[in-house]
Image: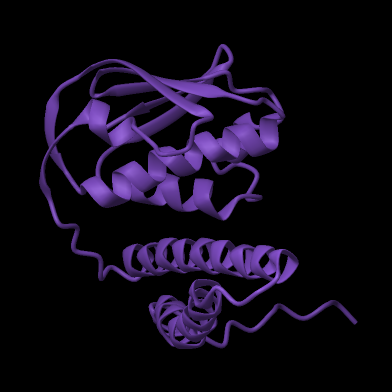
Length: 195
């Protein structure tokens, strides 16, 4: 007997709506965990070990919130329900991240785009290059609308382009950038993003 084809229980646009709903519903319990961890941390009556554990819970909660935000945006794009908030921003500003392992150099220009999501996409790509490439630092070189990330190791390249779906941030980055008319290409040890 031949294997049966899997049944898609959520055909068409229903699945992106399900993902959006799940992201929304997961925020409440996550906010509770984060809120109680912050309250206990600020109480000041914890030993050093407990305070360190609560700090780890806070950081993990913040990371989960970022992942849920990214997944929710991807679901809205795939479902055809994303309305980016366009505004003018300098491209050098878009590449600047708080992560000390990500350097930025070059010269930007003013563009109209969705700044929050483009900045998150660029940071996610840089973090994926660090995580999957085994390097300690990466740098964005900005030249107007072109962003070049280096070094990009061979192991990280297919993950950054989405050819190997192993990093949610990189996958969502590609979806966002392409939805906004951007392109991504890997070559010669670097990733080129144009917006």
